[in-house]
View 1 (cartoon, rainbow, N blue to C red):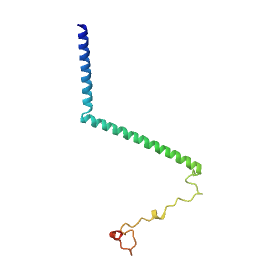
View 2: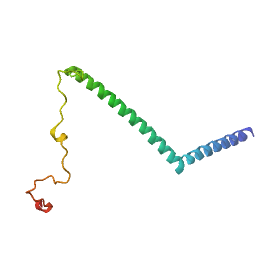
View 3: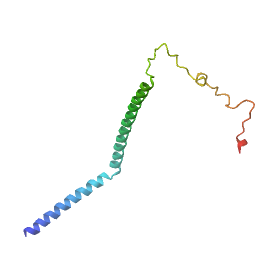
View 4: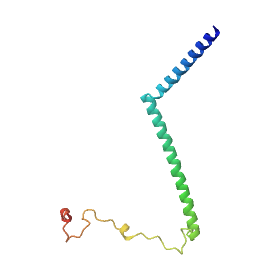
Length: 114
């Protein structure tokens, strides 16, 4: 008699445990839960990418400082011995956007190359 009662109770407990486990899994697979999980993963990935970018930037600045020190480029900006920084001529004069990039005596035909 006690054996039957034990196995009945054990079976009922296993059934309750399995039912609870299945219901939890079903709740995790609802569209709302899946969307929330995806959003959490996206936010976590964004934080990781931001941390990675900051680490890369810090390493880049450190390496740039090391290279500048090794090459002797660590001169103060206001040093009168250094000439003023020059810009390339192409950067000084903006290109006229109304004129085509090819010479005036050249007619541009797209079908010419085919």
